[in-house]
Image (cartoon, rainbow, N blue to C red; front, side, top):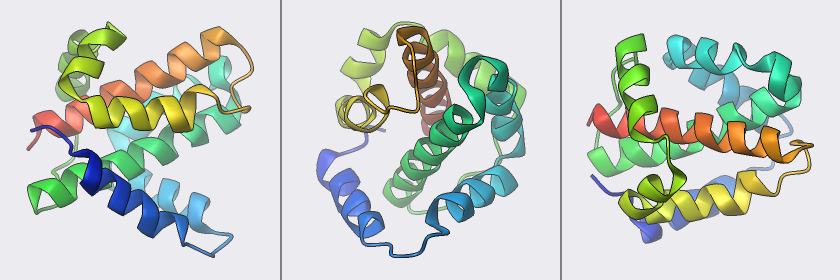
Length: 142
């Protein structure tokens, strides 16, 4: 499955209208509840990314996973370690993900790569990699 730009843009447009100050914490908490292994995987990188970086990764993974679920027409089952391991091997190179998922890649570049929460190029690289892994694992579950 390839995430379509129009569908992703529609979802982002809907989410950008959220007025609740609890949007980010609620979205991250819901993702952690529904995908605990994925949440633990990202949280294990707190030393490198800091708390804010972990929240950023989980937020954008949640948004992109919601886009995958909409495209699939159903909620995804929980991701497990084998799914994450397989996805991690698939997305080692950003260019492979960009070719396979151009809309998701563009979303990540626009929303994660330039976020001030990520203080160094290494933090940005790791954050982008982690979101790519989670999105690929979600896509593999469709």
